[in-house]
Length: 185
Ligand SMILES: *[C@@H]1O[C@H](CO)[C@@H](O)[C@H](O)[C@H]1NC(C)=O
Ligand SMILES: *[C@@H]1O[C@H](CO)[C@@H](O)[C@H](O)[C@H]1NC(C)=O
Image (cartoon, rainbow, N blue to C red; front, top):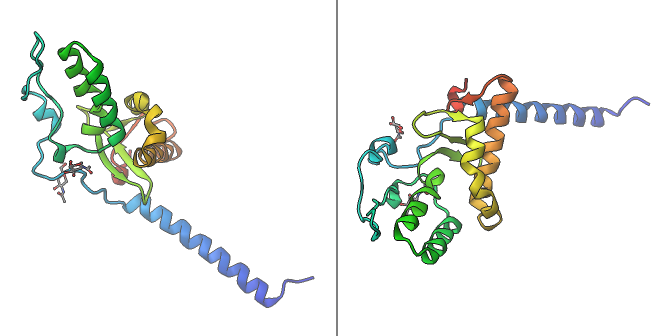
């Protein structure tokens, strides 16, 4: 039996909607303009990290505090702050405590260049190079996976990282790194 005109019209409408939503997805990916995560007055961390910053640890090494100012961190996670406080309070050596405090949040503090949970895209720089390396990103987050159940925003971030990298690979199967979403290589 031939489909009724109404059913046919509905089929066409559904097809059209599917096309529209596909076009929108493509538009989002191609035309996406990432928003800066930090104020333009924030120093680049590559520059900031060249000099020691106060306060210094109370241990014999007097290690500097190298986290960016709170307003210049690229991602905040209260779950990560809680771990830092707990671990530091249990460490007897203040220099080791400072090392942990500087390094554990470093991925979130300094490398989340862009993140938009609505379009599910994120761009994590490797550090000195402003590109997202597929292998390195996995390692940059390796110590944070266990905290994901305690932080929905960080969960969304990792999901966006996976989505962004899937898009890099789908478009460029031999790529090992990508530039920010709108100028992907
Ligand atoms: C975003 O940051 C880049 C440098 O990382 C800068 O060139 C650009 O002007 C900034 N855009 C805004 C809107 O602050
Ligand atoms: C992180 O929190 C600080 C306040 O402590 C805020 O100024 C900053 O904008 C936040 N950063 C992000 C990326 O949300």
